[in-house]
Every structure is written in C-alpha cells, then in structure tokens.
Amino acid sequence: MASKRPTDRLSRFFSGVAEHTFQTELGVVDPPLVDYLSRLLLRFVRHDLVAPLDSSGRRLSDLEEMLREATFRLGDAQRKIHCQIGDFALFWAGIFPESLRARSGMEKTTFQQYCSHGSRAYRVASQMDPCDSAQPSSDLLGRLAERFEMCALGLREVRREWERNDEAESGAGGSLLK
Image 1 (spheres, rainbow, N blue to C red):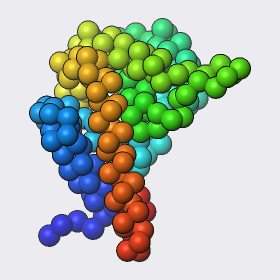
Image 2 (image 1 turned 180 degrees about the horizontal axis):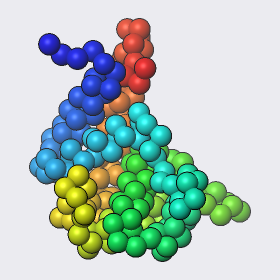
Image 3 (image 1 turned 180 degrees about the vertical axis):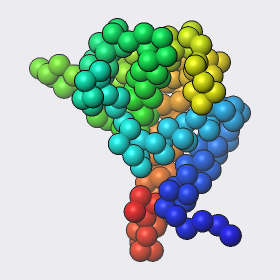
C-alpha cells in the first residue's frame, strides 16, 4: 500500500520528475547523481537545512559567509561545508535563478558566481576522502562539479513540473507541499 505521508509523496514526486527530466529531456543517465539531486530538493524544501551553521551555531544564509567559514574548517568539517556550499549554490541556481540577477547599484552575487562557487565547492570536497559512507562519494561530487550548470538547468525543469503539478493539485484541492 502506498504511503499517504506528505514527505513520502513529495519524495516520490521529486524522484520521478528528476529521473524523467535528467534521463529523457537531458539525456543524463546517472542514477546516483539524479538520486542526490532529488534528495537535495527534499532536504531543502521540507527542512531548515538550506544553510549550514558557523562555528558559533549561527545559520549562514549568504554564500560569501559560507565561503569565509570554509576557510576555518579542517578535515571532515571542511569537506561537509564545501558540500553544503555546493548544495546551497545548486539549489538557488537551479530552483530560484531569477533571485540571483545582479541589481544595478547593489552588490549581489550573480547566477554565474553561484555556478562558479558551487562547482568549485563540489570540486574541493571531491578531493577529500569522506569519513563515513553516509557522505556523498568523491566521484559523485566530481560529477556535480563538472556538470553543475547542467544540473541547475535540470533543477529548473523539475521546478517547472513541480509548479505545473502544484497548479493541477490546487485545482483539485491538494498540494504537494502541504
């Protein structure tokens, strides 16, 4: 029997849409990569895990703050924050790229800077050995670094499908995010 829990339903939705988008529309047949991306979406949408914590426990919500914090970390903590930086940059570049447009007269990190920093963060993390098997493999992180912009494009397509489905569901009295 299929679970009715919203998290299970959302997880199945993200898995299915991500698999369809990456395999059918983009021609990327890489199950570990697609699984990672669908889990990333679930983490960021359903939980307050969008931004890492600094050493004092304060939530870092700015890419520049995260990059500065990474310089103070060592070993596994450094690998983890680089993964978080990559995830944060990929989520925003893929799901909300319109929020990353530079505004005239204002200092704001642009879409291209998010792609550059995110790709670099995944590359740095890929060069460090994971301390436990729950962490993403170095090989996977290397592929995320190499294919960062393609992954962001795929996530934008996932968002479009999510919005189409949410509109259809709201017309029928439901929503994936409720």
